[in-house]
Amino acid sequence: MEAADLERALRPVLGDRLLGVEPFEGTAGRVRFRREGAVDLFRTARDTLLFGHLTMVGGIDWVDHREVVYVLWSDTARQYAILSADVPADDAHIETASAVWPSANWHEREAWELVDISFDHHPDLRHLLTPDGYVFHPLLRSFKLHEPEELEVKSRHV
Amino acid sequence: MSATPVSVPPAAKPAADAFRLEGELPMAGAPAVPMFEIETLRAKEFLPAAREALSALIKDQSENRVIGPVFNWARRNSLFPLHWGLACCAIEFAAGFGARWDAERFGVVPRSSPRQCDLMIVNGTVTWKVAHKLITLYEQMPEPKWVIAMGNCATGGGPFRTAYSVVPGVDKLVPVDIYIAGCPPRPEAMLDGILKLEELIRERKE
Image 1 (cartoon, rainbow over the protein chains, first blue to last red):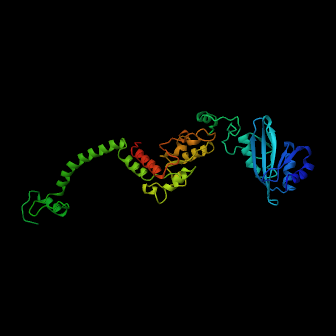
Image 2: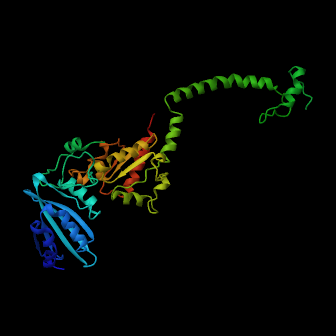
Image 3: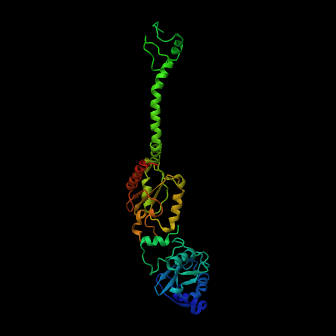
């Protein structure tokens, strides 16, 4: 499976919500899409293209916008595929993938607390790695290293 | 008995013959001393001495110098640390209880339940996520209890001191008695820390 195959399968479903498919080394291709087409893309990727396993969900902070990255694995094609969507920094949210791939649950919790990307209709959006009530998003580029005492005051909840 | 004349009344003689004290048998020919006289003599010397000793004992015990050292001796020779590992210091902790260093010869036996422990060895990086679990474990341990901060992370955050998720020193959560430096400290250092804690317990007054 190559980038052209992905585009041929996805274009009728997504229309202009598919921004393009480009080759990416080691994978079937990198699919860039608008966040409005997230659910349709996830269902098509799982049911039609048979990408049954969601390996990773991650967030990238590009300062002016943020990017959500999904890495898929297909057991039938034995290939990876990458989906990525840009979200604006001041309104960073996207539909959850945990309804399609349940393994997205914890990955999206991590992306939510570390990169501040909210996932709509997530069943259980709680802190995963940082304590409850933690006010920072440490993997954002705007996050500065704190003096330990200052961080203690802000993050101590016990 | 001999026919030597004695100076006691005749009525007391059979009693003295029947109940002679062991170890104080009179020499042959010596007059037999009646039992009641011996008791009287001993009581005269013993009771004041006993009263003096007892009052000194009570005075010492009021300052906990009699029973306290016994309990402290028992405590410092049977320290039970909590058996939980946080990071790489736990490997050195485990090695310290292996065949080569054998911390059990000091009576130090790791237990798996905090309710059986009187020593918490915090061996590793404490994050804010695990902080309230650490406090829960500490509060479940029965008194008296001690805490050893093992390694640089537990002492002051170590190389992760400025990280967003790390508690800069476990003494912000629980009172710490002994700090062990090292990254990680060798098992000898851990044993030295335990022996230093035993010296602290020896000086304990309460």
